[in-house]
Image (cartoon, rainbow over all chains, first blue to last red; front, side):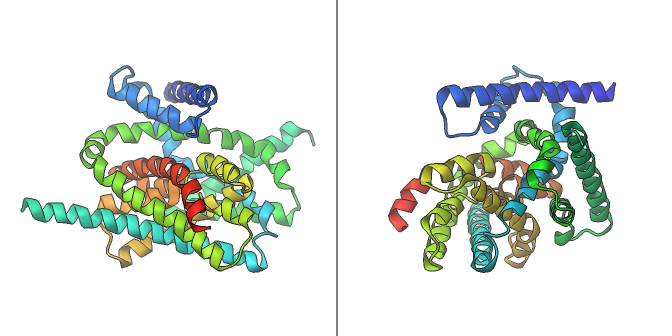
Length: 122
Length: 229
């Protein structure tokens, strides 16, 4: 029974995925279909068009095991080992430095503003 | 061996390695034992050692990969559960993500220019902090190589999940908004799955940051490339 519920939830979520893909294709949008599907599902939940109990179990399973779903794409790196060898190593260093910069600046900026606001309320 | 057999072997092998990596992570919780990292390295090494081409592995891998689409849609659920926080901090999230996205794209361009890489590589690296399905077409429209772009996106994700938590601790970024925004802006869904592990509200903030970051990067990349390159 639990398996059936999870399967049904995933089927509903998948339906939103296909609707999103379709909108992306028809509208020739730069936003990926999966993101459009997510926004549609989010709006459907907010407006009570969809009950959260229709998707919660299946969604929980998919979100919890996101790391598993990434493995096939991440393994694709082995196709580019020659590009990343030698001077190419520098590319990875640049991605590393730049990505940490992004995390720290956006994180520190938002935390700074939150603390400013909290001070304001005190 | 028939395609179906190869496919099944790839799926079952990946599942077993993933389950194994979860067990390792449960016992030895450390940034370098993160399941995405351990599984990726294990599968990659197995393919390299046994001389199996990536395309052969993907006969099964594609089935797992397919679920990534619905899984991204499923992120609407944690988003919905945390809707009160999102409504309250929307402006903060939008402004912080914009800061991060501009810094990510410009620092990438400037560092690559300084290291004297060719334009097609620069274009492939520019959208690295966006989620793969956005980064690939953005790289292509700039004149880069989509599959190489995916490699940089993945590396940005792994860096976020593995190193960024320690950097946050060191920089005293401890608020769930700061951590969630930083993780989602820098490391898309791989970072978000790590943020989700810390707390659901951090994960929800990271999801929103990831979506906004992808949209902002696709809008600012052509402009910043023109300006800085």
